[in-house]
Image (cartoon, rainbow, N blue to C red):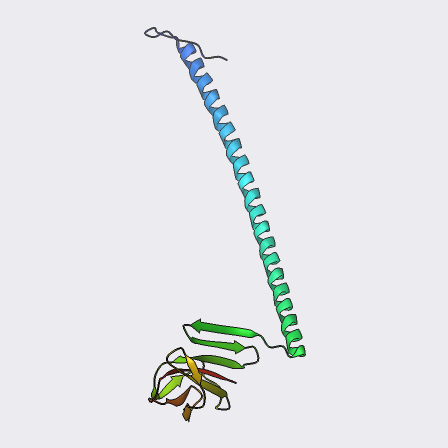
Length: 183
């Protein structure tokens, strides 16, 4: 069956009009069927793609978990080896101006800095020690030229989080460098 051309302004028989409507109805049905087939195919493709993505995501998560597990094992092995050989390493460090500290894996702490305050005052540690069995040293310096002079600083108080010191106000003293270490 084919579409019959009806001239504009003329009358067509009911048979011609019915045939044309039937032709158009058949074409619409065929296009609708093709669209439904395409939608079904697209839906199946999307479902397959979604399953593939989910499978790949699951595989990636499994690989990530395996990798993390392997990293954790390597880190544990390194820690065990360091511990067996008694090797300490820096786990935390900080520097700001003349103040600094280092924390070692065995808990040992080192810290130091510079003070420009003369007379008696307190130097607060950046990291507190666990007890007062730490060691500290200071070196005063003189102006001009930062010539060093030892033995003029006096401990006027020792605590886990600070030391009290005294730098004489006499002469050309201009400050001190300090260092403390312990657990």
